[in-house]
View 1 (spheres, rainbow, N blue to C red):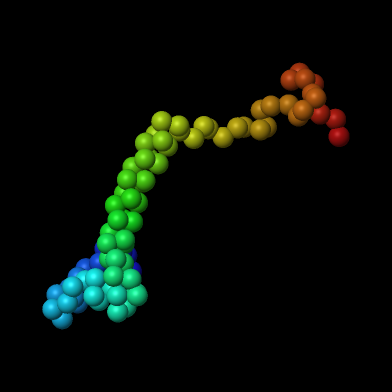
View 2 (cartoon, rainbow, N blue to C red; view 1 turned 180 degrees about the vertical axis):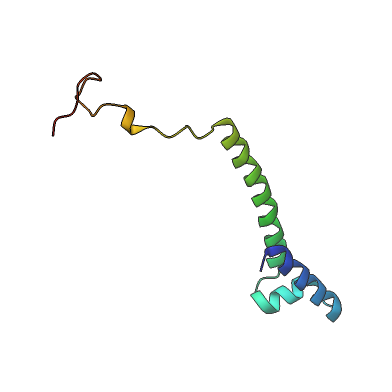
Length: 83
């Protein structure tokens, strides 16, 4: 279940019972601010995802090294490895 679905379920249940969401959250989670905290976490997640994507775009992954094209350490490029 995703967080948005849970928020909707809590909100719908609270409305159908005529209770505040904070009252339901107090009964269920022992935390009247649970729903507010969950929504704030989602808001932060969206901002943090944007921040990460911006960083990743500005700092792209470099192409993998073709290790077969470089000589082993201590060998010159024109020497062949001896078994």
